[in-house]
Image 1: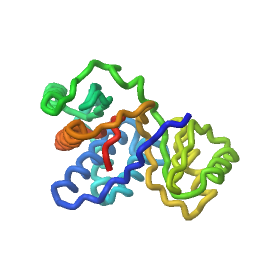
Image 2 (image 1 turned 45 degrees about the vertical axis):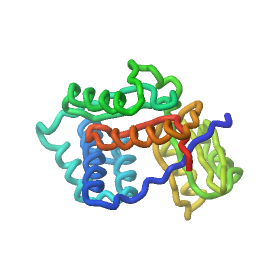
Image 3 (image 1 turned 30 degrees about the vertical axis):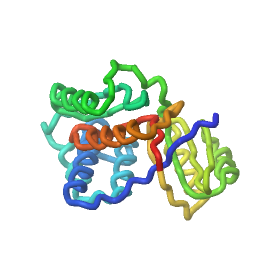
Image 4 (image 1 turned 90 degrees about the vertical axis):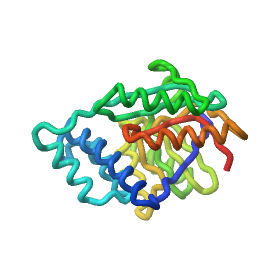
Length: 239
């Protein structure tokens, strides 16, 4: 398929404020996953994946446990998912996924980010069709050996790429744990740089100059919104 995918490894939070934001976002996602699918990670694969992801991002166990305990009790907060789609600087495509307890506030905050940073908010489905929802794994290794391990485990692989010694595997979201198990069993010392379920763009838009600078400001502004959980885009930024 030849689809390019930028592998980005999240850097560790350097300030207390940044850490608090990361903890809050993971706590909110874990709370909703446990509330909707049950507090037992063995029976709730979404919750298990989020816990693994949170631990990899160095979220303390007490933050994870508190979110699960909160979801197990009566009442609690009522968050709902909200998605916003549109076009960023230079015509790139953007998806913004949120969890919110106030749709009016969240919509206003996101719309303001778009309006102030050379972006245009679109309607539902405006760009989502240009992204594939996939399980993504990236790790150092050999493409041929990784593909063989996945095929032997009967994993449905959508695509596999290798660049600078880093193999990136794309699979249907339903194959996440099957693919992860196959890779960890075949390569016991494997260290994933990326192991996530993500929206992968079918095409990319290269940005430079003012468009690239504005895109960086746009992403930073979205990151400042507490309700924003994930931002997906197809922009290729310099460096």
